[in-house]
Length: 233
Image (cartoon, rainbow, N blue to C red; front, side, top):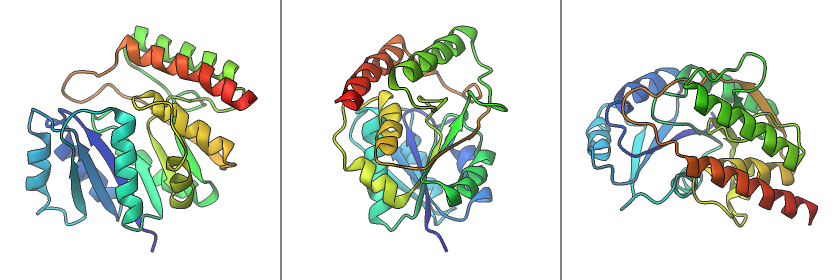
């Protein structure tokens, strides 16, 4: 049996995490690792209480908020060190539908990396119009710089084969925040990964406040130029 891990970085997701965990454990036979950055709302404490309910649940407590990419890197290393053959990464705020996880895992049988994509047929991004257009135009701009036929460079809903993921996180990184999502896809492509995209219907978060900022969008665009120059070099 394949050793499957789902990685959920959290910061102030106490209103979303229990329902998400219940859905995921009902869909996937595997492990779930919550990587919590000392959430002041008590997310980490709640997950600790829920571990008695789900034996496959684990939590990695980090001392402070240190960036999404950093959280994923720590979570990936933990999963791989515990024998992960397949690793899924997703948001914990309700914007990523748990029902897509089994689809990603099926597609992973023929790929090294599967992306949940908002910008292929069947995918959508039905949220506030300004965020939708920023993301759409940003991805068009990134594709024009980088040149590969990947539609959704900034997606955070992915499934990895363990060996490819290990190779990716061993590479030097330029980003530590949200732009790390794009950079890891780029690194996988440069390493020869077989990449597949499946439709993702992105949703507004469940409870809490969105973490999107203009700084996040700018970080993606700046990194795209750096990746372009790295590819040319």
